[in-house]
Length: 94
Image (cartoon, rainbow, N blue to C red; front, side, top):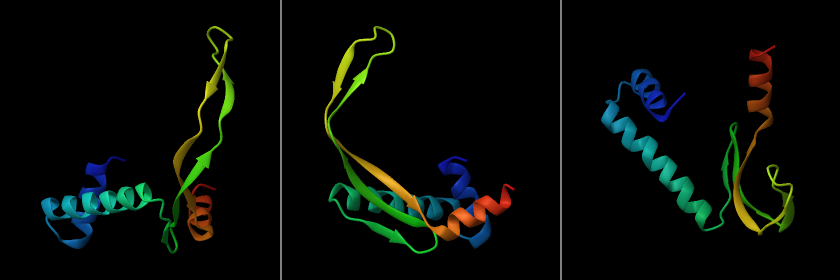
């Protein structure tokens, strides 16, 4: 499912135009990205929480040359889904 597909589904379900729905979806995504850039945690009850996690420096291996490569520490965005979300997905795919 793409962003355009999400816009279509929301637009059909709410009766809002696709242009307005796209603006809302883009606004939501921009808000999440901006908050995470500031290191904030975002909690959406029943869906999950977005947070930024620091990954430590580590040694990896280039599979082509088998040479060791140092991967520097980095901050990565993470989504931890809620128990309700997991349960619904698990039940629908069983």
